[in-house]
Length: 105
Length: 398
Image (cartoon, rainbow over all chains, first blue to last red; front, side, top):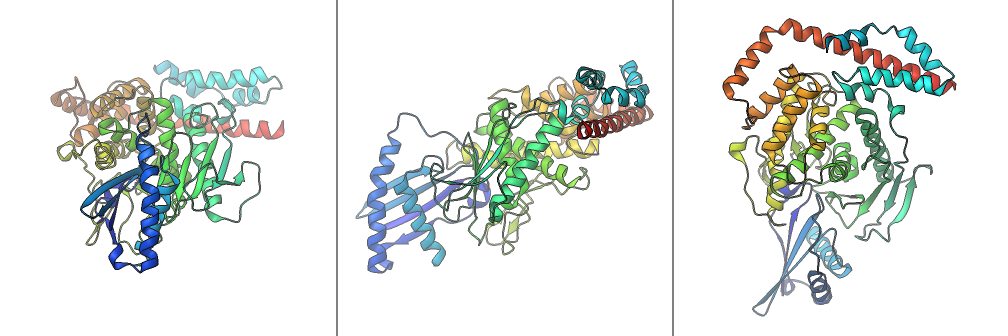
């Protein structure tokens, strides 16, 4: 499984736009870390879908950032998008894990 | 108009002093009101700003919450309240102090009582998220991250950022400029204008002395970047080999077209704000003195006269009209506005380039008159400061 995190907008939007997305491949991870990432992705997908199905589109909060997490597995790809003001706890947990992982590398 | 000035300038200070010391509250208020109404001609707001006590008293109480590095605002814990003790957490105290300075700026300079003009509470959330390199306004409160420590520092370290976020609240409660395309870029620009003015006001800097950087403290020393943005030189706040170059345009010919999506920064709102930012800087620098006294007044009045869909052209036209109303048609202030927008590629509607040049020449010929008006304005402002000081003494004594 390959997980890609792209960050958009925010106070420093033009600066962030110049940064490459962060990519994590479970094949390159220790078994326990790969399992943890898979668990977080599995939890975030339905939670994000529930938010996306809400009747009102998310409010455009000034300077809020948006995050798009692309999950590729077995020829299938899905994209989860959330922002600072409409983030599910499951998405937040996945985002945190990805940011911590990237920071350690 | 001249008689107003004469009246203003010959008001004997001792009369005002006596009126302001009167035991009768109505007499004191009447003295202040007289000052305010006679000051309508020029710098109305600048004079009013010298009397913070005149504004509606409100709470505008500050409360700082600690998100404890989660993204949940409801579960954040109270860290400092308006009357509570200082925190041991530097981020909490910085947010508290800088929100206070921003609140004081709006009160004293624009006689505006907090974000909504009615004493709205100022709620700040710090330590949001994990290594969150951002700050935002969510419609009710201001949220600040710690930065990641590698590229970005703690966002509470920058007063221009804190005032920028509070400024989004003010814009939302005045015009509600829609956060996309040109209205969104204007929304962003107004927050930068507020951010720069609040910083300059707290430092006592003139337009010439200020560096006009937004978020000077945001990048860590490891990053060779001056700031998030430069209002004086959009496109030049950072230029690094690793992270590229500041892409902000400083002229309409360089306007950035991006999609109106989250990926496109809602139509490049953080990019194109460079154009009105530069116009504000040029106006303030041309007029001279403190940015919040003339340029800031014109911009704030223009913001209040705008609507949610206002675009650059309309906003520029409004600043020109407001400059004419607040000062006078053809005044140095109005010419500064005209020239500033022209320099960023926006011609004021109904003012041909030829006419603008002619007016500039006329303004040049009337140099002596302009200087006389400036001197009179300075006198009015000095007098109003004296009165404010007297009022302070009266309040303290009574």
